[in-house]
Amino acid sequence: MDEAPNDSTAPMLKLAIHGAGRMGQGVATEATSRGWRVQGLVSRHHPGELGAFTWYPGLEALEASAGLPDVLIDFTLPAGTVAAARWCALRQVPLVTGTTGLDQTQQAALRNAAQVIPLLQAPNFSPGINALITLLEQARDLLPNVQRIDLLDVHHVHKKDAPSGTALALAQALGPLEVGIESRREGEIIGDHSVTFELPGESLSLSHHAGDRRVFALGAVEAAAWLRGRPPGRYTAQDWIRGGKA
Image 1: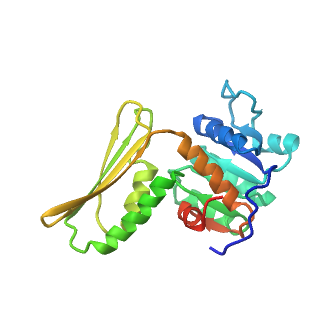
Image 2: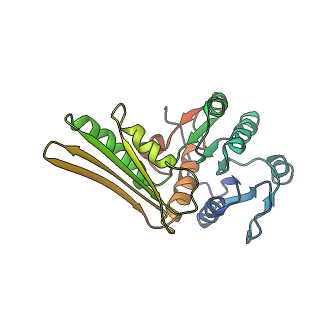
């Protein structure tokens, strides 16, 4: 994607969060710690505890009360993400989304929105995971005699999707190579991922451990600052990571 001017130090960068769950509240906290204005969190049902943040039952209610944000950050379900993309496209608001599990029709709705707004979609906003994706792409090209690739995807017992969106992104980085994915849901593990290349007479493993959920929220905030001011288009976390953090 083409580079665009971006003043990431703007003290009054206005963010709105679509989704008031644990991730949404974490994003709001990280944005506030950077001195940015969080206009509110939007969800169909009141989450109960929001601290100093304002809750809105819909994006229209947010707009009517607080005005339009500079960027909308979305952590909802696929249908909610599609609604957010359409709302943002009509109002020229950049969109960052971490929602996974979208089907082809829903992905098409995001592509349509990206024709008029900058839209960044990523299954994981951890800088470490996105560095791992780059390393896997390099390993794929450097290891021509791979006999087998095993990917271990471990998350907490509350996570519903298996394989996770992160695991699928790691497998996608390996291109046409066949990858065996094992998903485990154990305890309160935030996210552990490892990829092992089996070669004749040797093996190579690359792994990532997430020890603090804050890395995902902070990454989403940094991606939002980076996206602000970009031209319309579909962006990924790799564009953000390689383009330089805000």
